[in-house]
Image (cartoon, rainbow, N blue to C red):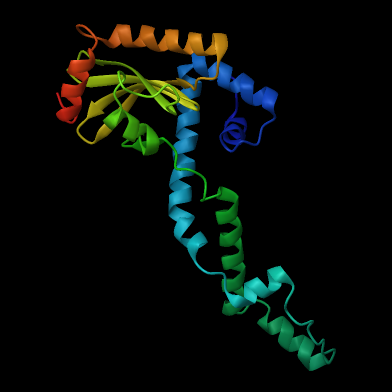
Length: 235
């Protein structure tokens, strides 16, 4: 992995130029460590967004709204010595400190963009776990009946050496293999998402090779996949 954490963070936030972003996406397709680091950054961002979302949803106090809209009347400046002394004394009063803290918090919340979609990956006990739309696709989507335009496409379903049911998937941002645990889908393989042409074929080929290495027995056919879903993908 040749990218520093700041560059990966900028990639996750969509702040890189197109050329660099495409380069990172290409390398993540063949570098599991880079793909996992990207997923960890997305999981951290999702945690921060979830933590500060309630603050962003609160109504902005009237005094702050007035400052933003310019509706506040111009202050009358008192140039007397007593007024200047009183101003210095109150500059760091608790109410002013609270206003400063609120402003900083508001800026942090806006910077994290809590209105963005929830990440498809989170961290639990030091392991990467599917969440959001990815978890829903792994839980409900059948390879035999999914639409051609599905945002997340399910590939193979199979059992691994531990007896877990595992499923390969491809998404725009992330592809990989998730295996069902008691509390969700543990992501055992991750790589960059699909785009098109040769890159998509290479990504699909790598997933198929990883699935073949993990698989015990034959992959599920349509009937076995439906039966596994009916059991909640349990062993």
